[in-house]
Length: 349
Image 1 (spheres, rainbow, N blue to C red):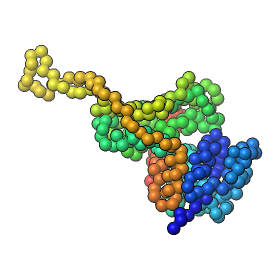
Image 2 (cartoon, rainbow, N blue to C red):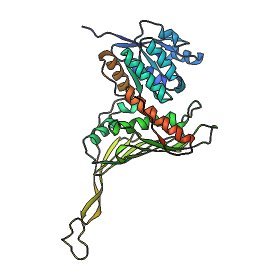
Image 3 (cartoon, rainbow, N blue to C red):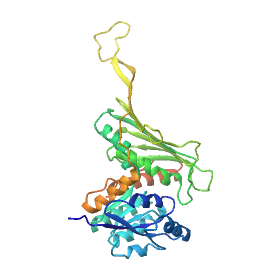
Image 4 (cartoon, one colour):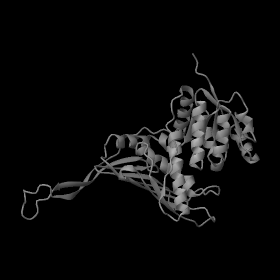
């Protein structure tokens, strides 16, 4: 028996929209029928580069189409909630670019609505579909690096600036999503963030944030679109080993057998009666570069969404993960507005 064909529509074809169109076009058993884009020049772009797609100037054209099963949302972040809500109410499955919404309350409302209507709701946290990040998660979960002490991430570039959101809401969703995923779905208890603004009034160009997770694990996130070099790196420091994921490097992941061992310290008098006395000895062991079969994360994300629509399986970056990420971003935003004071992460039901 043939697999039912999934018909999709897409809202938005600006900066990231063409990448999503390319990722979905050619996926087996699916088609993108209509692209809704309010700007005439971007509609012309779709006609020229993706002639197999119809174009419309409003999301209503695809939300009202009964043959469209699912909607991909690649519009500005401030519009995600309203368009996703309308799509769910129209009975469509939804893949929305990160972040799911710009407030925790709106994100939770979308999650509840999708649950009530038994529709798939997935957010485009693309790095969860990166083979190197998944391998990191496997190593951490297996205890291969021991207890996680702390994590730090850097997402820097002299790159694309935005005027609708600051660098925290633009870039940090990637890192916050990765951190939660690596720590087994953990959610930070508090976020302390400081931002600096140079290019546009009221829009932070660089943010330094500290997230405190349960169990004493700390994470530092540095994001900037005003930096001389392109950096996409996550470092995990464990009690036994360390991990370095570098998305820019040819070898994406390194496992370092480095750290400190506690060894008996007998002192000057060779005091065997006090074996509990120890000293720290630095360990510099091997560096292991795991073999990883890389595939394009965005195509893997698109294929995963379609499979979840077909089977009803919960998406990896589904409502719970997406809501948790928004809650942590929202706490970071409050901290930015408070001048860097820690803000408690507020999670809804």
